[in-house]
Structure formats: structure tokens, C-alpha cells
Image (tube, rainbow, N blue to C red; front, side, top):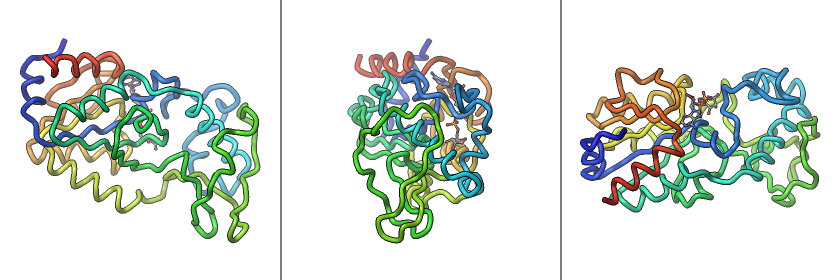
Length: 251
Ligand code: APR
């Protein structure tokens, strides 16, 4: 299943980047972005909900969707793939995690510095003055069953609170993007795990790594994508193959 030459390449690496998408959290029960929406949300197009226009059109609907997603994450646990990435960091001199996910499962699995390119469900801010908003209590008062929910008001300007995620049409956070580009352009090994690689500019990171001669390793359930860029393509669940890979590195 895993080419011994790949293990040697990872063992020899000085700087490793792990770039993840929604697929790494799928085995924790968090639907991927392009899975069909489930339940009450199946009639909504996620790309409409994940936009400033969608929020302006119906703040309660969009806030309710994000709170439902935050609840799903709070009820979820990191899976074996998240833990394996945290262990991998102990086995190589330098490892950077860059994620497109807005959940906190990498952190809860023990990964230290995680670069969130698309923001986080846990960092809401005011839609008017952009000041960060502190959730009154991290636990949700009552289970969110996917209903509309009025967003809270900003403690400073009384504007409405929005999710701290990057919406379609918005720029990525400058510092995080710069850190991600630098890591991709200076690594020896670049893992692209559980991402469909369709959303730029994040999807350009594996190409940047390949351009500087890094070995790009794709781990994904499906075979499509990164054909020209990934030297190794492991078609499997990340929760299955990453622990295997970490074990082989220990041998
Ligand atoms: N193991 C590995 N890969 C998996 C698994 C799994 N258990 N389950 C699903 N996948 C793969 C799917 O085959 C798919 O290629 O994960 C990928 C998930 O792709 P998307 O749903 O498109 O998620 P992602 O790539 O993270 O989307 C990128 O697009 O919609 C925006 O902002 C959103 O951050 C998101 C970005």
C-alpha cells in the first residue's frame, strides 16, 4: 500500500507541510463542503449561505446554519487522521499544518500551530465594526437543530455578529496566506489531504510546493485531482492511511 521509497523521502525531509480540507474531518462526522447538504439545510446552496450577500439577505438563516455547524463540531471528536498528523510533527524536524477547515479538530488532536486559511467557526466578529465577539458561553444554550437563529449584537457598536469564516468573494486573511505561501515554497514534502483542490488561491499551494521540487503526496478518497503535481497518490481514507504511515516512520 505505501511505497517504502515514500517512507524514506519523509524520513529525510527537513520541512513538511500538511495541507488539509474537509475530507480530514469527514470521519469525525463533519460533512464535507461538497457533500449533499443534509436535513433542514438540504434545500440551501452552501455557496449562497457562505457569502456576505447571503448574510445580508437573511442574517438569521445564515447565523443559524453556522451555529448548527459549530454545534456539530463541538459534538465531534478528532479522528485518527488528526491525531496522526499531530504525531507526525514529533517525527520530522519542522511541520506546518495549513487547513481550509473552519473546525478546531486539528488543535484538539494536539497540532500546535495551525494556519486557518478560511477562518474559524470559533472566532465570530462584528459585521459592522469587525471587532471580535466573545461567545457568552462556549456551550450552546440549547441544541441547534438547524433552525434560523438571530445573530447576537456587538458589545461595542451593537452591529450584528457574523461568523469568523472567509466567505466566497472575500479575501483570505493576509498573514495566514503569507505564512502558507512561505511554508509551501520552502518545504521538502507537501501532503494534500482530503481536499478537492477546486478553490483558489488555497488550491495553488501544492503547485507552489511542486515548483520548488518538494514531493507532493495526495491522500484522498477519490483518484481525481493533482494528477500533474502529486508524485504519490494514496487513494484511501485519511483516518486509515495516516496512522499506517506514522507507524512505518517509527520502524
Ligand atoms: N479521507 C480522505 N479524503 C476524503 C475523505 C476521507 N475520509 N472523505 C472525503 N474526502 C475527500 C473528498 O473526496 C473530496 O475530494 O475530501 C475532499 C473534500 O472536498 P470538498 O468538500 O471540496 O472540501 P474542501 O476541498 O475542503 O473545499 C475547499 O471550498 O467550499 C470551500 O471554503 C470551502 O474550505 C472549503 C474549500
